[in-house]
Image (cartoon, rainbow, N blue to C red; front, side, top):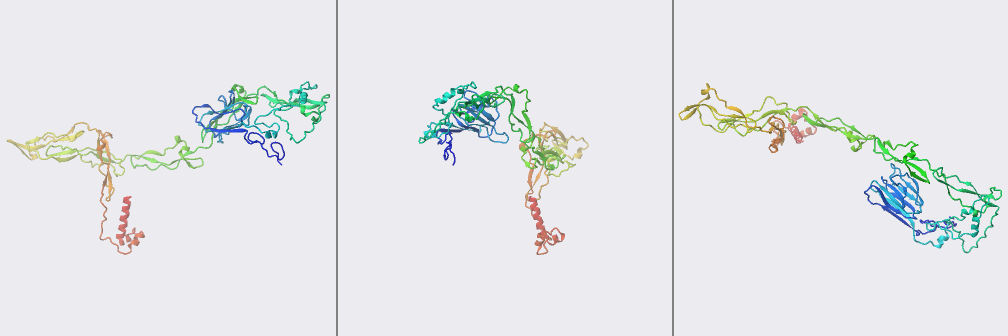
Length: 624
């Protein structure tokens, strides 16, 4: 049979969450919650208050962050992570209980910090968070005593020393005979045995059922033997305030010889009381924190750790000035780290051909970010500052040259009779790559063309009329005038053949003129050959804006720019019918299917079928 918490064989009683044997969980109350407030200011922020008497304390950060938990008593004494000093994980005494401070490994774990304590606390404690980044949430939980009264049955079955509603009771009375024994002086040691209480605090007399007769008390032991302090236990620490306890043995009162403990009355044996020892402080030491995460996810990075000068006293670890650790070599606070080898740029292809056959174009190549395992990864995995160019300009040399022309002038050089109109002609590089031009050549287009605005009146001798208006409104142009051979008669002029005046110096009939600078004007080349002979092709020409000195300009009127491309040969393609091209065999379709039209014999024997196939293929390619 099992033994219950009341030490009775066959009992099924267990200790409830309130720490009571056989309790029903009503003698205490569980307080829990989650602190999720959004904080803005850096520094200490109060999270929760732990009241006096709290047990089973659990303060846990819900996920890892750069924040820290801190604990302080209501009197203002810092227990953990106070005064902007971060303590190492470990056990810290405060509020009458021992707190376990945990901070999981910063690299391998995602769990947050936590404070754990069994309690009970003997004062009010405040939990803080040192806020440095968004709050992931803080879960808190503790148990406090309730208002319920403990039933007599529970009290009767409570074991000696068992907490009563979270508190230890005191006995109501003790035997007067025991008190007399306590006050008895040990004549052998000269010490008062009364300094050691016989009954421990929190002890209760054992409970006896009412239907049982109390057992007879054992006879008192012989007074020839008594308890004597023969020494002390070893100090729990070598420095920084430890504790030790006196050792008592049973001895003969006369000979002082040690005898078995059964010779002495066990009820009179003094209870050892704790004594302080080795009060001098321990040497200071460097407290080394955990390494932070590596500053880079790949390649060589840096990581940091906190180094504090600490000193232990009274079972507490204190942060002290760093000069106290000057006798020790200070560990490094920074170190290099490398989680993995970084990915690198790789050039996968050679440069493509230039995008233009002449002039300045562009060419490209394939550049990829490749991991150390050879896999293609996102570009962000590689250093963008070291990325090789995947596009660059390329110069294929000068393009072919072509004649660039302006439109004909609107004015005729002569007000009557024959005159001329003019235009500007210049040879320049042509960048229209689809035009098979090799150079301007010697066939310079004419800069003048004849014009006639009607007959003029007859004149005499060499007669020079007035100069016409300049052929251009701006820039270089020409002026014309009529020079004829006339014979003056009375009241009239008869026009003669020019040879009649050949012995006379003929006045010039044309001269240059320049009214004002033109500024920039549009120039264009001749139209190229149409790209198709039927079913809609296109032809192109190059248009440029040039200034008076024939330099490239941007001052031309955009709305006056001549077209650079236009459709041509939009009529349908009509195949020519050749009467001599006929099929000589009825099964020429087999020849076409077998693709034998490439042979001269079959091309002639099945001329019509092979020609239709050829026309369809050329039409298909033309549409592409």
